[in-house]
Image (cartoon, rainbow, N blue to C red; front, side, top):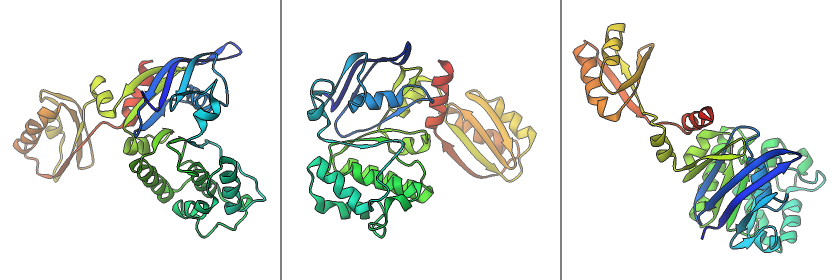
Length: 302
């Protein structure tokens, strides 16, 4: 039994089906990512998991408790970071944290340390109304961590953060997971999902169109890795030789770099063809399919 069980979830809004017969199971201890274009049903799914809206049909269980009938028990060990964070402007960060700790029945003494962990240790007495969007996002993550919840639901966790802040949040997500928390996240930043997630689900028009590890999704679509080769003397003659090799899907040249999408077994023949054609290889590397490629292929197919 998973920590989250979604069975045949359907949600209609005035004749519009936002989520269509969705079934998912999230295992304890994994980092699970929910992806989809705008309007795919991600936010509706998350709100249904939290009991903020009620499904038209279907069932959601968290830690074995039904969200609709046993909502308080189901939500007891959940930390939630919404996509749009909002706090009371006239409270300081530490007052905000202590307020949420009191609501949850958690120990207020942990609040200061949580603020330090998200990089707000020097801003704890500053009123939240004077916070930047990035600082608000950090505070949102800190409040989601109050009480050491077993499940964290994070909607766009790095929204509004600069590259360093985004990296820090990703490291924190990994750390929380290593310490036993299950992470359910939704994000439009596919590279960060690729870095942290164990499994990925893709929604489109409310329907589940893919569910697996990134590697397996890439294999299902037959998305080939790319071989990126830096040459001293690239030429059209060399590029043409590469294109003729069995197992090469396509190849193009930009400056002194040739990028080849190919079957992994073709790599040796590609390198030999370049050398036989008079090319001198300065460097080469393999680039595996990205989550963005997988996402685009699945949503385009739909």
